[in-house]
Image 1 (cartoon, rainbow, N blue to C red):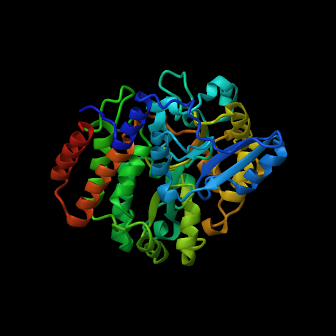
Image 2 (cartoon, one colour):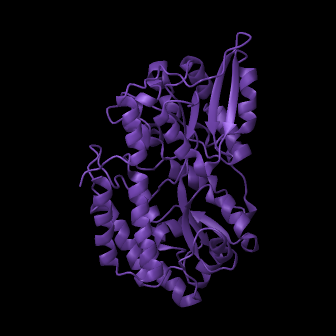
Image 3 (cartoon, rainbow, N blue to C red):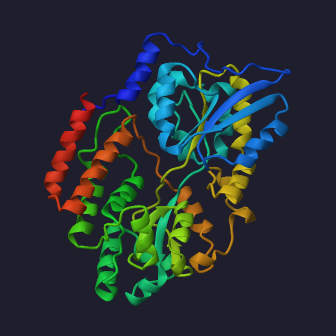
Length: 420
């Protein structure tokens, strides 16, 4: 099967074909008082508002106009605006779907043209390469934060099941997914508690640890085997052994965590805050260890400059400053945005004894995870294809759909989608 373009991205091609070039700048603000006006799109908590406010002090010649857009509408708004050829900002934040725009580099300023290559060593290599074209000639965005993953587990439940409780010992004994599933059977037998919250998480976290997923770098679909099939089979094994609570993210997940229905899950660093808010009654009982199967990443954002900008040089200087290691450290202390600049991981501001996690310093775990994520290529249709696989796994979990039939059906759906 061959990857095809989604409808919205086709619009981007149409945009390019009809000659709506970058010369049709959408920056409507006029420069005034000798200042350069730069517009910026972002969503809540993707950037530090205090840092944005300091731009006018750092760059007296720049009038930055940030616009916070609803996160639920953000991606679609950006796609349709670029396709329309009107209304795009100078600077744009992008979530982990940023590399879906790599086939459309004509919509973004190539940051390498402004000297971005000299910044490369400041950032995690896999994160930097995320928005770099396969030929290494175009970089469409700088890294903001990252979402290294780890195993969150209930120390008290592991102890009742006869499992190790020290994070290093847990990582050693549960080093593979097979070890993890076997430990889940012990937890179930000893306590009646489910080891896993959902099989969708099993699938998602396994592929996040992989070096290839749905597409190769020539955009050929390879999700009908390899790492995707391995992740699918692991999720199905957890389902068939009855080790998943089948919790849905949101109120149901929050209640399950607070009520002690789940012994563990693999999640990103930003899950810490969600867990603390969801499960206050379990404070002090959770620990964090390196994840079974290896390190992975969920989420993390980027910031780029659109070709609509009349002032790409000034815009580049602004994003270069915003994403400096020093400012990423500040964003971590104020916003919990885990830096993509490993040089700050040893800074004392990154570490603390966290009462919710039994006074463990979890930064040690997440820093190691961040530095060991495997680079992988996503492709422009990653999100749509991934949703199809997750929807079918949901049907396996909730409707007891035959896993083999579900696998065949999802491949048919993907083939149909990519052939449009």
